[in-house]
Image (cartoon, rainbow, N blue to C red; front, side):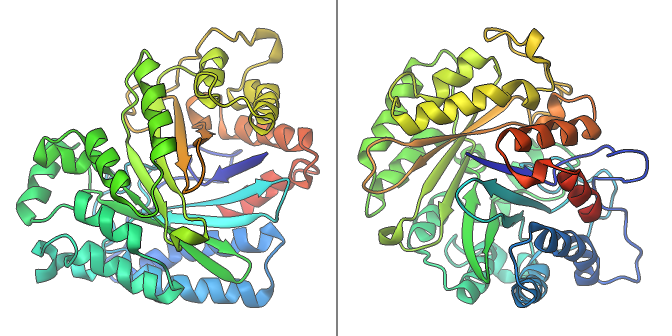
Length: 394
């Protein structure tokens, strides 16, 4: 089992720790200094509390972030109401997390929305593979020796190609959206190494072309080499049997060599969090019935009530719990990812739960997660370890 706990939040953990969007900066602080103050303390704390990084590893990662990430984040917020990353909850341009599992060491990860100085240059109106989004990716990819073969294909398909397209999309988005999100960069900090991922928003391009984003997604993925026709067919067959539409809202790719095990993840969302529906999706309607899937499903079933902040006594496998904020269009109910990889006939399925949508408070979230960790025999569930780490980081 693997669990990823992230920095998404907006309320308080107890009475004295605020978690959420950044305070409005003063005019005397540079953009880089402002974002450094937002990023570095959180990531430094997570790297230390993970307990798996040497002092040299931690220093190397923080230097990398300061040298290669911060300069590409862009201008600091001009309004407390500004929303920067629609895939995250809150008004921050980044999300930090720790991946915990029973097979390897805890791994700190973070995702950020690049929008650095090149966004205001002439390159902003260049063709997709020459414009500022592409050049910003290159600057980071060079530093981590990333493989961009798959990225090149998806960038050509989904990046907006002109100022006019950006303006057209922005006019259709919420008025407090600070900038149109075209892609996000994620970095896994594995020991002293860094692995890069990129996430695309296919629905953004559809807003300007009118071309169905799901169709465009499958078309471009079928062009990749090496390909994964078999798992893509399974996804298509499963989607055809589901009563609710499963639009592909985001595409994530590993920026490593395809022959070295690169993956593509397709993210979708459902309104129902009923356990019967979860089981149907995790097994792909019965298509995945191998031992690993069924064991994982059993473990997930044992902790599902904790993720929804419900007692075991009231859990009902056919009932979907209402969300706390149904007006939040970015984070309603359950997110799934279909993970495809060359050489694999079936996609892997992962489940993402926005805990804040179902929980009474951040304190309840921390308590429930510690119980989840205890059930797995992980030290993060003992002696308030997880809660202390959250307080320290935020």
